[in-house]
Amino acid sequence: MLPYNKNLKKFARELRSNQTEAETFLWLKLRKRQIKNCQFYRQRIICNYIVDFYCPEAKLVIEIDGGQHYSEPGITKDALRDQHLSDLGLRIIRISAREVFDNTEGVLETIYQQLP
Image (cartoon, rainbow, N blue to C red):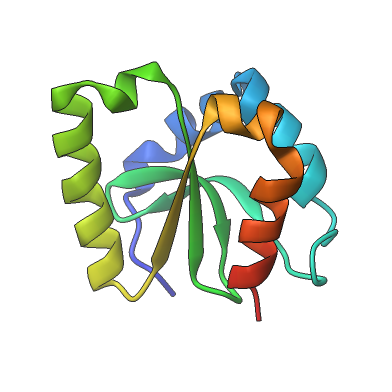
């Protein structure tokens, strides 16, 4: 079991209730074991982070990046976060919110290839 910060439970619940359009759109493609019969969770707490989507079977984190992730502080923060999650043995896929809509099939293929 991965470590998690119990204090983030309320915030994770709020994030699930207020997903971005891209997260909602992708969630409809990931939920109910639609890809390789793998279970995904949304807004999952891992250590002191809340990841957008997590597949424990594949140890795969999927992050949907909006505009704030492409600023200098966002890039630095994401790199530290990705390194910490990688140190736990997780693989991270970062996908731009625009790509979720503009290249849905490509995004799903990328995810498919990472699953067992």
